[in-house]
Image 1 (cartoon, rainbow, N blue to C red):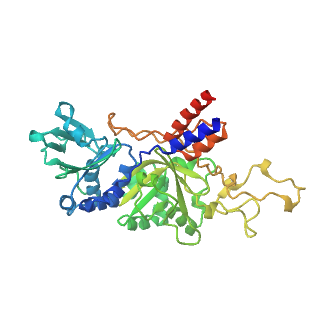
Image 2: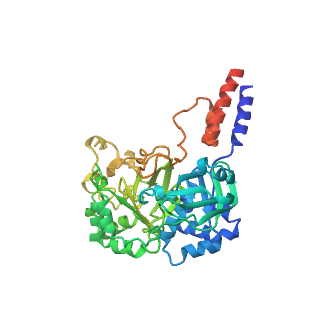
Image 3: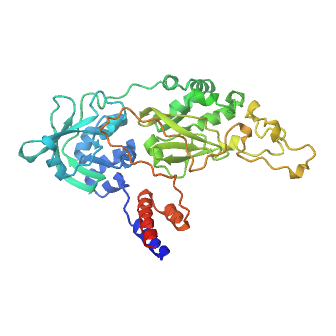
Length: 441
């Protein structure tokens, strides 16, 4: 009887809808917003929208969006689209029932930390004649944009509303100054990495890719000083270039886009002998990169200037093609699985095999052993501590959905199976049902 009730609860739990949404898939059904939708994809603002549990998109018809984007850089268009993405749920009823007839609401642009003062907010006000106007929070801004119609609602997660004109303020879409990559890295605490890319000539490879689509994962200085980290300066020139190329993607992938990435992603080192791919592991807002040897957490965003993104990471990315293979007959002795690892490769004396042990019975070194000084590859369920909160967002800004609690491990096999299938909401529902079932039995 208990199992019967448990199966019923599991079936009901699986029917609980999730809060996920895909803004570009929704807008694909409305060709009148195809230009707006196209720029959402080009700038990757769509990934930022999809990563928030609650958001209202103020969309522009094709003519208005084309006028806004005319002669503007992608970085400027991205700022405008972020300002049109409200981090609160507004449907037509809520727009007309505003307390005191007006409100300030935060936007995706405010969360970047680049908005001066409160210019990352949007003023929504009920105007005469039943109209609802939208304007920049800059004092004296005119309500040039007005609510036109409702497009789509997923209560209370996503609302899509059409407005008549864009919301802007002076400086919002100004073209950013050319970026000095080494100066940015040095200021971000990545001086050693900046020196390596300059001396190796890889900096020129990076700079030639920055206008086409480029993402850089820069290890901070502490990453090079960690215990057991191989000395990259002892590598051959060709292998050093490969490792530095392994730290970059030939595509634009800001953190929000990495969170939605499935499967392996190609690096600038991909295409030669070996894959030289990376895998992404996400846990809430925490994003880590898996090399097959170890994982590294994405710590902060140094630059997000479409189509270029520079992110810092807390450890060096070591490709398994160079650092994870077992020794071959041509290797330099049994204690040197790779000539790239330097003095850190020698194992502790207690790890050495007994001198009288037959050679054929000696255990083969693991491809991910600690001989390189690195820890074992992290389990997909074991992650670095989450990145520090971004203080740039106002306290009133809604946060992303909290990560599910993975600490509870029910002994009952049926509950364990249910947890592996259902999402966080389904797990909570199933747990309550199981408690009721046990009470009935």
